[in-house]
Length: 80
Image (cartoon, rainbow, N blue to C red; front, side, top):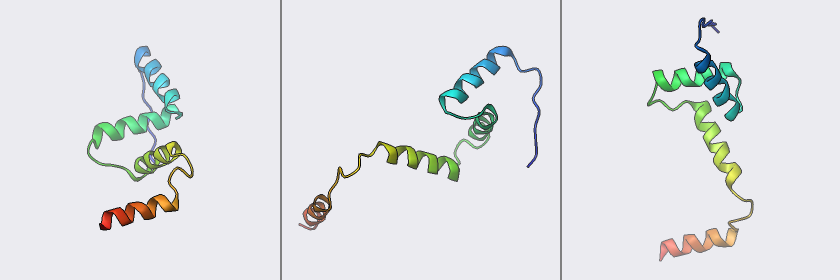
């Protein structure tokens, strides 16, 4: 993969990038890539981003919150 070196970054920009990267549990390099993708491809959803969103949503679902009986009841109600 190609590499990019960025020089003369303002201190405030560097510190903010570092802070945001820590919040997202990413390296600064990964955070820069994400920021560039979001700016350059604002309407495109990347597979890795979609997968990360799905995993985040799944982690919020409590196991066994919906039983097979609940599913069957919903199906039967939908057919009525």
